[in-house]
Image (cartoon, rainbow, N blue to C red; front, top):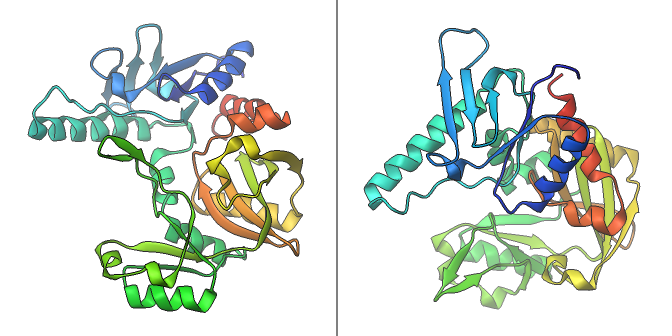
Length: 318
């Protein structure tokens, strides 16, 4: 694409997956501007004018080493950016500053014209809601394990009793600490006897456990679909990566089409799906991470994932 504008990559400084994609884009001679919203005011400047052009904001995005015209950005790869916390301000001022940043810088970036978003941040956010995912998967004909989202302890006990083996999952992974110790909640088995009135405080997600023989991670970049079988003895394979075995595979055509339709339903161009494969060869939809990690899978399997994402970003909007 001779004369095409730069690819913008929004991410934190320590994002190795973004590093590999940027290296590939550089190898191809594609101009890249990398930035992190957290650097606003120090290493990031934005200036956007509205009302003088019919197609969106006119202005520039500038870092210490790069600058890009907003109207010329061909693709925005929204990877793992940080937003500034403004810890040096008092709480009220920090809240005000954070809101101005998200709606000023964020709103400007979200309005880029003629730009391919991988993915659009607002679309990412919508697609992160698991109840929305489950409803979409069911509507598109994917097999969804029986699932209950509730804060009613009576309903929770009845569901667990009815399905015998049930797991608990968080509705959204949220980093937090207790007494200085980082807390992470994995997919865990739960019994009816563990349920009491405390669950009324917030909704909980309970799901019938799939009698699986393997997990499958599916990475989609545009229309290219890559599937990897993950073998382990773990309920949640993320607990111990050292025990995992990987094998690329080809999905049934109907399943591949359903996953592509799922992304289209959420107006996404990429995503990482988690599926469970049962002993009868049936695939069960578990969840989508619209901005999931995939770098380690390329290392383990040799699948050309970096190249696929570089192709997508270089191509830009249709």
